[in-house]
Length: 382
Image (tube, rainbow, N blue to C red; front, side, top):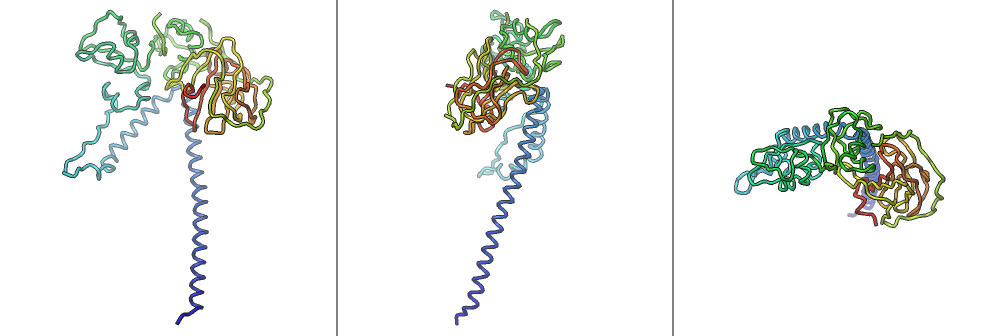
């Protein structure tokens, strides 16, 4: 016999259970979201702090940081590697799969280095010069191609000429990038060194930006006799550095553009020549013009940074959030002509080209960031 009261009580309990479960799931979702946000926020702040320290020290801590990371990774792989791959190291016929060997720290030869390291890491190698022992049949050009360098770079680093002969067993010094390695003598400045190797005033910035060059003072770029400097793009062939007082300089403000939307393509932000291109140690382009000139917003957006906010590095700068995942940065300005929160249109003037901050001459340092990652601006400019 059907008991209606019992059925209704059970149905009521079931509905109550479903309601409680829904409330619990809503709470769990909100709680998890809040906790994850806190964790990711902490991670981002820690990452930004670490990046700022490495950037401000211009590579001073990069080498020990990379060495420590390599040691830590090797330790983890040695201790936990066998367990991680224990269930995947046998074939159906019972034969073992041989794991890729881990490089022994400090004993890697040039071929090993190029086999196991990522492209960007291979390029800078912690700024170290490696030794290459010539094999039978090798030539200067084949060695240069192997390391991604120009033949001239190999010749200059080893006091050789195009008429020099090499033989198997001979050792050659291999620089990390194209250019010249210079030993500083008394009276040298970065400008005199740049001039000696064919760099003009604006191109000297490459010596400063190379992260493994060190200076007594990161603002005046003082040198010590006997130290070595890498001169990127230098070739075998003097203006004193000035220090700009750290302060924000604002000119007459550009009018607010009102409601704007980004077009998704970037125009050139300044007129002049490219004095330094995109590289692993300089993820931007430098546009130089001795006469200065206006700096334009590459696309429409909202100003998020304006002025000399940290008394270092970029000097007077402007950052624009374009609202589509892209952010552009304009650095070393002599005058800033926008304010934080202002909306600007594509082509609006945001400031004037200058040489504030860690700069060796009048130029614009221009960055394009997509999702927080630095991209090559030349891939986006029209």
